[in-house]
Image (cartoon, rainbow, N blue to C red):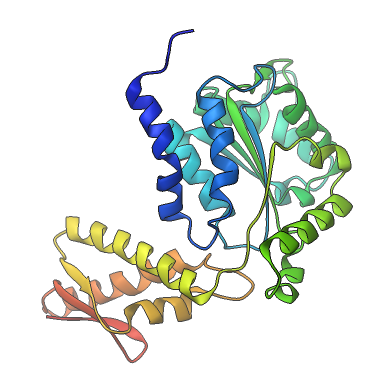
Length: 303
């Protein structure tokens, strides 16, 4: 077998640092996912199964979906194109199988459509897997075990070039009571809860199981800083050169984080506040470059 190009090997070596720099507050997860990704990209995975299978457990808004999209984008270049994202809350009854696989011999359902878009490689994300109907879970088992799925028109899709990720919020409430426990204790407890709620044959088919913890204030501030810098970079390209001043990060954390939703609203909060500050300055004839500061519960530009 021909050795992979040196630059490809270097990218795989750089993968841990890349993910660690963007997934905040979940440092324990990165060493678990990286070996499976590297195996898959080096051709070391079982050719008759998906390249890797991951179960991400934990509360909403803590990085489960974000990590999936980052992994996909890094390995395949375009997460929007190569990540097939299926929200299992849309597949809670048997009839939803038609949505997934197609209604008749001339249709291929969402799986066929997304498969074509991804060019037969990438990630398949089953969000909130515990909400899926048992018949949908049967299909999921087939995907995990044999890396294939047959759609309504009789075509069998080969999924051996995909990584499979399932997320679940099982145990989210319990994490509040375990916040002073060790990570090993938390992981054991949450995995046991998942084993009690998910079918054993589903749980057994995952290469990697990761428990994501709730985000502390330090992690929330880091995430806010990352998202703010990303937004300021975008605004800078539009001619609005802004820097972060007093109270900005704290305001974003206060409005962008909720106990039950984690940092899910953070991006929207950042965009809303930053763009409001620029819009207000433009409409009132003031400079749109300068220092962003927090003032009376909103961001303003101090030039």
